[in-house]
Length: 624
Image (cartoon, rainbow, N blue to C red; front, side, top):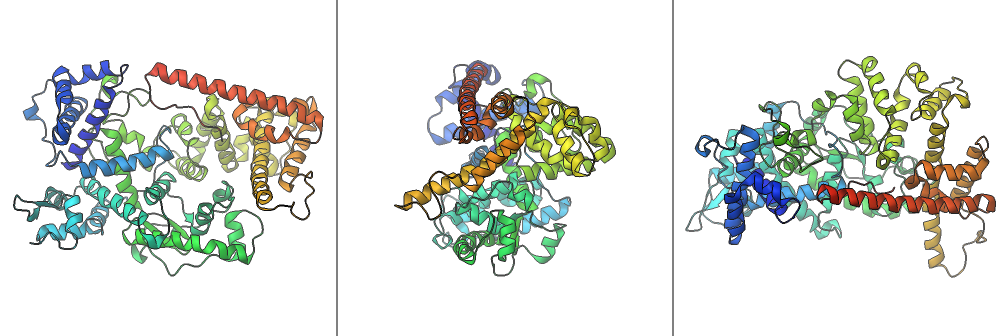
């Protein structure tokens, strides 16, 4: 059907692009064969090129999915009715671009909650405002191409124009009538992307930029079902210094069951900002006043205007200040990603799959995703719960903290149950992480260990990775843990993260003060130009407390921090290099220089490794 043809075209184009890279061309030539490559090279014009890349993708897709390439083509399933459907191909590519900008490097995406009722999902897709109006037009084509909705129906393939320019039913109507979930989701991709583009251009919604609305939907998809706050996201959009940890520290309550949304609808009453106390809780920025709330209101109303239009199309739900992505929209976005990364026939729940050898299947670290592995790239929650902890942890440390915490909680509760799963999860967390993933791994440890039973953590106090965090959790519940029982390496990493947590608000405060000083000719009242901001003072005090029982005191501690994790330590060390105590400032400045050298060396190593692997994007982590 249609999604097969578009997936083949996506794969064919990727293979054609690889032909332009000297170190990639040999394996592509071997895969396609000289005759198919010649067709690609000789293609003249858009239509010939589209046909050539689609046939190339079909050839490889059949080889991966069905076995030997020598199978007669006549015995294989025919491509979809419109192999030159550039509209869907473009929409799928647009979704993939947004995903690559947000994620791209994670082993696999965090799963969003999908509808369990397949019949209900089919009914929702068929009846959605994205497909139903076009299907109704196609069932009884109008005589006039200027009829409302015809342009959209033509774009989505529900209508075609005959040689005389009159609308007639298109191939999408057949797919809509067959009610195949995959086909319906693919059909919904294009109108979803087009709706987002229209909202970007709507002057009544403010000065949006190209791709903003689709990017917001993709961010919701990557958040794996997180319930968001309109006020908090509006504050971020208005460049307020909202701490990243606010979403975990001040969660927003969403629906217990998504069937509630189906029964009561997705939109809510006229939006009003939360009360000042609730706004302070959501933003975690300290005390706010009425004037600041008044300044935030226009940005919040702009966001609400866009959200409510998306809610009318079934893409999001909103209840007061809380909002999130609907399971229906999650299905459509996942379908687009399966098409973009699959290249062939991505397997879905209930569809048969075939085992292939390693050469056919490839792997994620090699030349990309194959038709059989792409569903692992965007797994369902059921598939994630069935994974082992060793595979789950490396992916989870790449996710946003709320998504990682939510998915790991569901994983622990699944399978054999918490008693059986906690030990394996703790063992996976105790395994050393690659140097590029150290900050993410420690954040995952800090997120996860407070949920574990204290009795399980007692055996990990002596662990070089988990020790300090396990000790802090045990102390929080009233148990005594001697400092000497925790390995020095774990204590050092715990101090590093605590110091980094203090450095972030100190940096924000310094930026805000710089802006004030640029706007004012004189210093603000109450500042003498030499006294540190309260946030910077908290950083200084935190260092002094951490250094009291550290071998060698503060000078030794700052040097040890730089060696433990240069990328993370550099932020705090740069601030500490201006410490009023020269015995701390001097070693901190030297340690900061060492961090910068280590970071540059890591970048060069990553670039060298990427070139040896044959190009592509760097897999090195940016410093946070």
